[in-house]
Image (cartoon, rainbow, N blue to C red; front, top):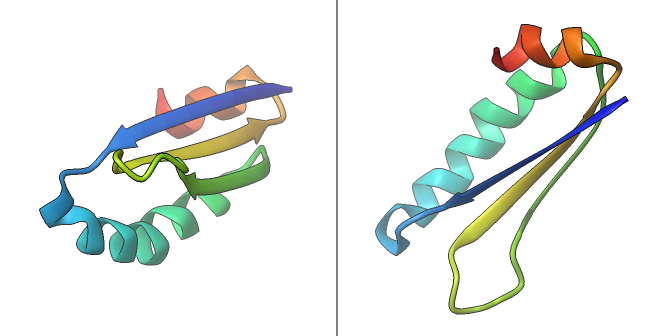
Length: 69
């Protein structure tokens, strides 16, 4: 298995749009990928940061490459 950790920082003025679009578009897209074992998404607990993390686990390297290159 392979674990991929994706971190992103969002400017405060885009935070609401980011969260909505991530829930409606990005998460369903990732969940539909062949070879995905698990997915966790959340916000970093530090209140001064607008940082999010997406942790995915994949069956193998081929599955991950098929998803994100």
